[in-house]
Image (cartoon, rainbow, N blue to C red):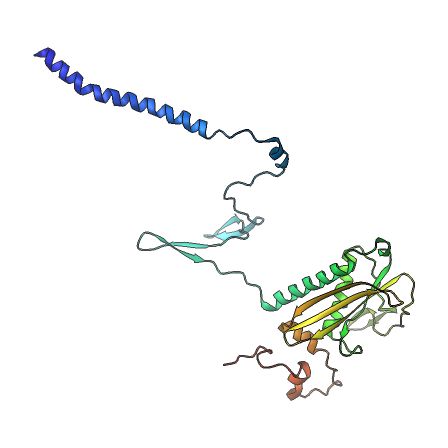
Length: 292
């Protein structure tokens, strides 16, 4: 009887012992299998030569420079995230979360229009200079005010801005630019300042040696402004041409509106302000008025 009871106990313990052995054996096998599966193959030599940049950390968050901030009454150092969807995860009653986006840093429409126009003029300068004969690089560029395509005697703040911006763009590209509006001497006016630039300067002959003139026209449509520019010699030979289209935005319309002849000093009735500062063919919608 004693032997029989021992045998039954041993038989009951045997499955547990075998299970324990299987567990220890199984833990080692998957580890070896996992190690074998995740061992990367040898990288081909061609791919190794192309590996020139270090990989970025997975899920790395680009941030701006450090800046001090006050959080909870104490001074801390924070980084501002760049180019990410920033917001707050707020828990809800069902156990999930609600994502509330942070207020966006919006750019005012007028500022966006100004940046867009600057980029457009940069594109115009690139068209004029790209592919230019290297021998012309030593010549001096003289950008002039762009004129109305329908009347070459008329310009506007837009036309003058094009010339000013092209002076900058040519200079930034290593092209010599001449400031031809310099007065013979600096004029100082008490309470105002010191002045050297003047529009009352002697004419510059178009036959001046070593000079390239930057000229251009613009045509105003209801929806857009068409710009054409040329880089010409004094004899009229056109060396390079360029063109672009500006959206007839609120800022563009304001710059074109300034083409109207200024009234004599002290002769600006209030009732005429709107008609003397804006083109007469604009609708209330074009002027940005609130229409119901």
